[in-house]
Image (tube, rainbow, N blue to C red; front, side):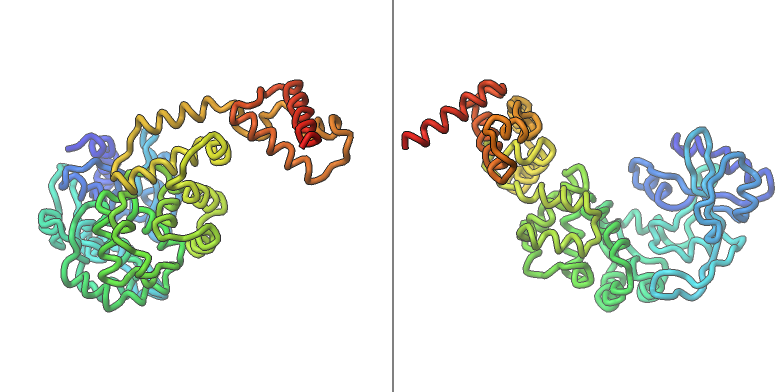
Length: 400
């Protein structure tokens, strides 16, 4: 058994010793069968949340009403969730009631996709009541049971299915794909925030190109904020978003490839409910894609935007990142005599004192001229040198 599981075995032992069932479930079991790196490990049990809290010293209530308690073991967090069934769903997202049960099989049958509904016992033996092992072997995305029923219960499952396709490189089963086409309108009932989380994970998947094609073929994109078919061109589809780092880069590439100008990009990202900080970063990065860099543009952009927009430019045209070019750009940025306006050896107050003039828009204009000369290495960034340069500029103007 893989090490991440062996570390969690004491939790299963404790539950077994007190007469309860306990199994590893979900994505970690799926990833073992796929030979992938294992992420978070989840545990399912017939012990109620109150019992789980009583059996372990360190726990965190993250949703007892839905059966989930986090157990902390040697600094690692494990979600321990009680077997449950879910009653009729409301608003195509949440069950009206959750009932705790004693059957692992019933618990697995209420899950979304067969590949996520496989369990493993303390000995490493697989329990599969829904054909999950078969679908993992076939590399197929299939709902547990009738896909139409699953999607009508929780419409976000459509986005989750495409997201897993992006992460795993699987294909949708025919039945699942047809149900998506029929029920895509149900996504209108899902909050933008939840769609955004799934979209971000989808774009970061290794197989995002295939996933985007599915969004188009099923027309799920019609239920996502601001997307129009004519924007989803081949360059947009083929772009390897997964090679980017932060979400600011991902969204920056996204809005650039959609062909949005700055105002359109701001409006679009607001529809997606991005935070103000992330929105500004994404728009700034997008602005400098395909830029012809010089010292002034590097200064304006800043190091992060410079390197992020260069990566997007490289991936857009070459489908790979040239790290030697990024290193060269970083060296050029580091060599700039100033990185921000505050680095200038003179301030607005200095200019007012030097000119013996009251404040006005002339200060910003003069600081901009000084900044440009310093960046172009025409002027040394010293107060005395700048004052001499300004006098020389005045004399040239008088002579003209």
